[in-house]
Image 1 (cartoon, rainbow, N blue to C red):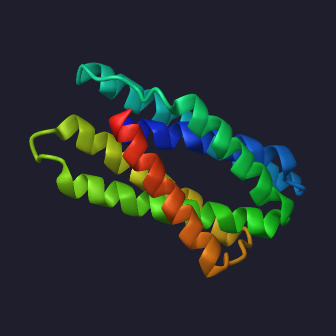
Image 2: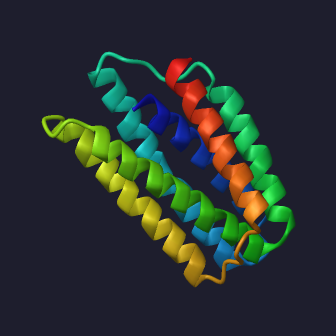
Length: 159
């Protein structure tokens, strides 16, 4: 759950940065709405961590700053690329959450409900970005995103 919380910290930063530089007012509105929805995920995961007697990652400020910078860079290519970044991010997050669901015990209904709701929201964010005209990102960019996410996962889990 700590990794999921850190992912939501990253989502806050990404969407905030992407909204900041969105050129089209409708795209800006979509990013702002998604950021508000991600606040729910942040609260759910933080509350669940407390219920489990755990804590958030000490590295969250680092990941927030890095994700904000990545969101700014993603925005430089224009709204279509910016949306493409959302599509790929949410695809990877949805994949992670599905894998997490597969590992959660059936008896942990509370965590399963949180992860399932988050996964549904992330899928909707990706579909919304695709519907708004997202451009496909080049393979090397998608691979770099996956590697960065893996690094975040490993570090947030341990620290």
